[in-house]
Image (cartoon, rainbow over all chains, first blue to last red; front, side, top):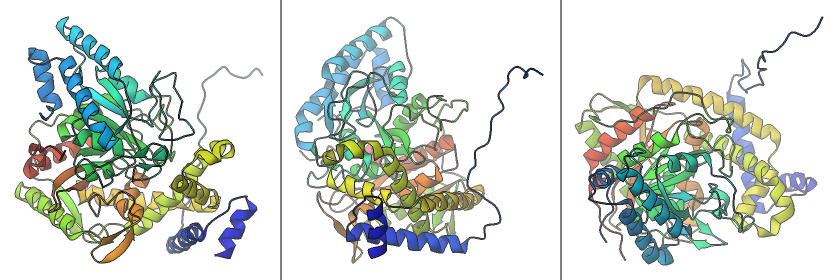
Length: 59
Length: 467
């Protein structure tokens, strides 16, 4: 698993083969799932701004 | 050993004067003294403070001040949960000598409702694992076979309840940490809906996956405890603002309940004895009038990958500052998970959160058509301490992955899930089922659980663990 190990090393993380294999498996499965979904909308939560009652700004 | 009473039984005896909180608390402390050297369920025992609180509880009752069903009832807190003035290690060496200056929200609530803290229960390091085989404080042992794990991460809570060291225990669940020890120790555990119980004062593991909840010996005890734990808390950003409920179990029945028995995933890769015990419980439910819907559920393997990616990322984020300064003080298995999480790209975390919402939507559609989903709680019974792999129906599996296979995904969904013991294997180990309900459907879930518990009758079998 050289790519996962190398990528982690750049960020200062040293991975064992088992850890790299685990990440590769997650990557494979997530990629497959993402490909199966028809993303017609964006379901990731986004920040919604709350209204804060207060005094009107001076004109 | 005289079995401890249930909360209702104890409450009646406390109010009639047949029993005092001092006697009840002393009985738990005696049991802790006798059994803790063998089982290692407690990291800290607060005997003196417990007896003082019990004396006060007795005086209050005599003076006519009644704080409700938990008044004078012993409770143990998981050592991931802050307790003012009492050492709180989070199961780690990093916080070995930490003494918080405040109580976690759930400690505060239970104390205000009159519960008596007897001590802090042992756990997997930082709650990041299911064996409770802690490299710093030793392994917690399963009361039904001390050579086996109690499950985790709330392993001390499970062992303490099963061996009569406490009547109630708090737990936290990020991938099964309440439900797994409940299953392996033969007690009841409830992972409530995400946001129903405040996380304030609890060391996080996965911000969007952590669920504090009750562990007890009966569904009714868990219900009474949950009543105390709920309520909006502005100190926890994920705490929901909704009216508190009473979880009355009176007249609880299985009649007319629609329950999905999944035809895929949940009954695959499972020990045949566990499968038989869970299916037998399902039959009991059917005899009691429940209607079973055989159906397919969304792929649990996919859901587990999503939950795993989210937990790896969130836990790595939580621990980043401590890893920088105290890396050498982490145990090897926790460190390996945290490093794996540090190497997972942010895009994978974001995609997992998007997929999570999709999969939740499918589950919610399913739960519009049925009241509950019934599954085994764990595919196996408690494995031996130190085992890395376990044979399940002729196939070798990683202990950690197989143990959380049926619980982990439910944390990503945020749905409430109740674990109830459903029988004994030939080896004398408990097996358990899991009932998954609708969001904020704890009242219905606990009623169904109580009716199912009564049909199974496990809770009536108060056999003491072997000495």
